[in-house]
Image 1: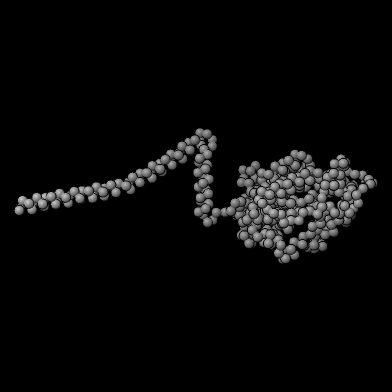
Image 2 (image 1 turned 135 degrees about the horizontal axis):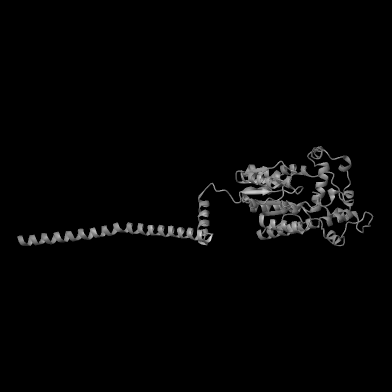
Length: 398
């Protein structure tokens, strides 16, 4: 009996030790698992480090980063942008180098209301008569613009500035142009008689203008080839897009083609004043953090009251003879205007925007045909087959 009990106890002791040993083996295996996971993570980190070191060496030897590093960087920047609540919208630097008498005062009034609503910095220059700058003036202005707290919209009557030429980050440009002859006529009478904001504004703007110049008949100015009504004065819109190069001020193909190239490469949108509501709709679509709600403001009664005060007074329509001469002098301006209008319509089509603007109530096809048959300005006594009513129907009086 004693031997049996001793054997049973020994057997029980062995069984207990076996169970304890098996449990200890399980625990030891579990304890190794975290180590294995950490080794895997460590290996991943080392592989990533090796990848970046190899990429850095490749960059130094070949003068440029490999595509995979650029992709990784772009992805990380995108993720950081999503995670950060203070990331600025793109683009956060916008320049509106507004062309004179192309609705710019209308747009600036809208921008003032939008800047307060959307909390972006609107800087509108008080300099209106210096569009061409020296090299030092260009650099100073570009540095001043770049120092504006972002997001900002800077506006000024100034010819296109090429920031990248001076190794400064290039902002996004926007602009609006209009029919060249309509723009010229609006400017001609505005300089003399101002707008509805006040009858005396024109005296403040052009205090040195004598009465014989102020009341000069527009037809005489055009047909007798006064400097104000001939080249290079009427070559006005293209230099705003061509830039600061001296050749940009010379009417010709070089300036025209360079202006077209800048529109395609540096301008987010160039609209036409004749379709202003569509321009505002596109700006709202392309730059929502600046222009959301702009069309509602534009159509509001309070804004309409302010906007109507910017119309030029005492505007007159030249004779068809004068229009023919002026159109021939502005043939490059019209080629550029037609190019911009086509690009604008193409942008509307790409975005799927249904036009809410009324089609123009005139056609300049007849002037284009006449210009082809008019290599030189018409003589003063040349007879016209078309009466003045045709000329009046062609022009718009905004």
